[in-house]
Every structure is written in structure tokens, then in C-alpha cells.
Length: 144
Figure 1 (cartoon, helix red, strand yellow):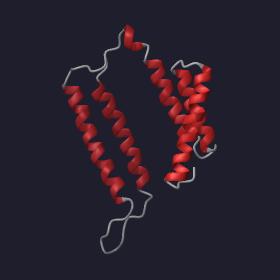
Figure 2 (cartoon, helix red, strand yellow):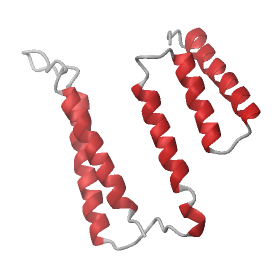
Figure 3 (cartoon, one colour):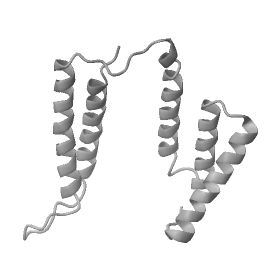
Figure 4 (cartoon, helix red, strand yellow):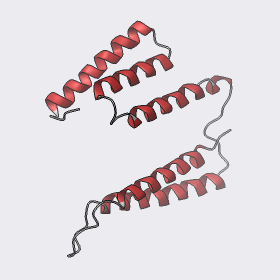
């Protein structure tokens, strides 16, 4: 049995630390006291860190288990880990490969992870990628 509060709190605290460290490189603000671009991310990172610690302490005190791995649920662990890994690869390769190729491969891999037929997976990935690209370029005017 796993206490989700401790896991989620730990992950959230690590992410908040990462965001805080990254935001240290942002401009600090003006000399007349107007906060710069780094103010809000740093403030949010500190708030999330404090709330994460509270969640971890609450999880340690509360012995309640939210996630119970049994025969039914344990088969979902592998797809979950593969989905997180695929998302990490997609984000990590964002700067190195074109959006259309990256999104198509990401969606194709997700369909394969969740055991869709290959024909459906290819059609779904291509259609979804095209729709996302169309919406961002033509409606939001954001070049991907």
C-alpha cells in the first residue's frame, strides 16, 4: 500500500524547488520596488513548497492509504510509468525535433502503450496532431 500524499508532496516539492532555481535567473525588478518577472514564479514556488511539506507531514501522520496495489491495479503501473517517460521524452526533445513530428510520435506511442490497433493509432495521432497544429497556427496565431 502506498500513501499518495507523501508521494505527491515529495514530487511537488521537488518541482517547486526546480522552478524556484530556474526563476532566479529572471530579472529581479526595478529600483523603485516594482517586482520583475521573477517575482511571481518565486512566490508560487515557495507557496507550493510549503503546501507540499504540509501534505507530506499530513501523509506521515495519517496512516490512510489511498493507493492499494493489488492484482487489478498493479497492471496499470507499467503503462503509467511508460506514459510519464513518453511525456518526458516529448518535452526533452521539444527543441530538437519539429512539433508535428514530436506530437505525432508522442500520440502514436501513447496509443501503442494503451494497446490500440496500429491502424487506429496512426490515424488518431495524425488527425490529432493536424488539429492541434491548425488550432495553434490559425486560431491562436502561434507558430509551432
